[in-house]
Length: 431
Image (cartoon, rainbow, N blue to C red):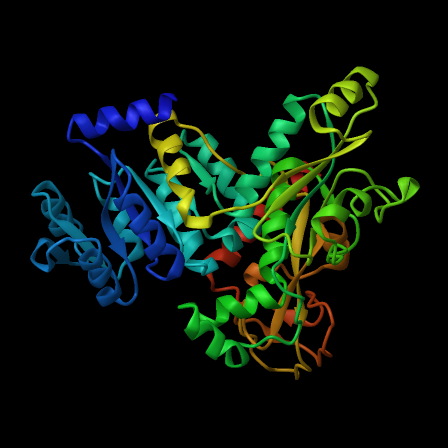
C-alpha cells in the first residue's frame, strides 16, 4: 500500500508526519494515543481550553513534562517545535500558525470553534481534518468550496460514520450496484428528553462529556452523521427524522428497501438508521437487475437478490482517523466533503420555551436535531442546529416544535452564523 510505504519512509527519514489536535476530550485523547503508536506520524501540538489536560496527555504518551511548552505565542511555539519539543496551548487558532505542523484535526464538537479553525486552516492552506461533524453539516458546503478555490484541503475524518459509509457507497458503485440505502446502527433507543444532568453518571463512567452523551441519546448525533452522508452522496432521508426502525442484522435487507418490494421507503436512494443490535456497524442496501450479477452474487454470497446487504460490523472513530490524516498530507486526498446541501439538521425544542429565553446548544436540555431534506428545511424556514445556540425565542415555542426564523432569532454575532449566511447566498445562487 502506497500510504504505508510513504509513512515508513517518513519514519526512516526521521521526519514523521507532524500533527496538531484541537480538543483533548475522549476522542481527541484517543486519537493522540492512536497516532503515538503509528510509525511515520507524530502528535507535536495540542490545543485545549484546559491546557493541563493536554500536558497530561503528552505525559501519558511518554513524553517528559520538561519537553512540553505551554504558550499562546506563535514565535515561542515554532521555536519549541524546531528544538524537538511539544506545544500545548489554550488557543485553537495558534495551531494553524505552526510551521512544522502539517495537518490539524478538529475534535471539539463546538460548531463556532470548528468554523474558526477550519476556515483559518483553509486560508493558510494547512490541511484540516474534521472530527467535528456538527460544524460540517452546518457550513461544510462553504468550507469545501473555499478549500477548492484556495487549493487547500478540508475533509471530514475516516472512522466516524460518514467516512466509513462513504467508503461502502463508493465500493458499491464501483461494483455496478444501485445504492438503495446507506444506514448506521444507533446503539440505544432515542430519548428526546435526554439532558446533560440526566446523563451525568453514565457519562462519568464512560469518561465522556455529558452534553455529548445527551446528543447521542436524543438522536442529534445520528441526524448529523447521516446528514453528512447525504451531503456527500446525494442520498436523502425518506421522511423527516428518518425511520429508525428496530431492525436486527438479519432483517436489514427486508426492511430498508422500497415499499413496493416490502420495505419502508417511498423513495429509492435514502439514508437511515436502525436501533437494532448492529452498532457500531454500518450498512448499505444495494440492488442489481443484471441477471449475470445476480448469478455471481448467488454463487459468491448465497444471496438471492436482487437486493443485497453490504455490512461493515464496526466504525472505530478516532482509531481510523489517522488514515485521513495520512491521505491528506501524503496523497492530498479527502475522505468526505459536502459536495452539495442535500440535507439539513433542523432544531426541535425539547421543552416549552418562553418568549425572550436564550437557547442552549447541542446536547442541552433545550433542543435536539432532526434531519430534513434541504429543500424541506428551506421551505419551512427552519433553524439549522449548528446556529441555534444562544438564539433568542421571539414567541412561545412548545415542546417538540420546529425552531424557525419566525419564532427564534439566531445569535448573529457568532462566527458560524456569519459563515452560514455566506453559505446560504451560495446555495441560493445554486438553486
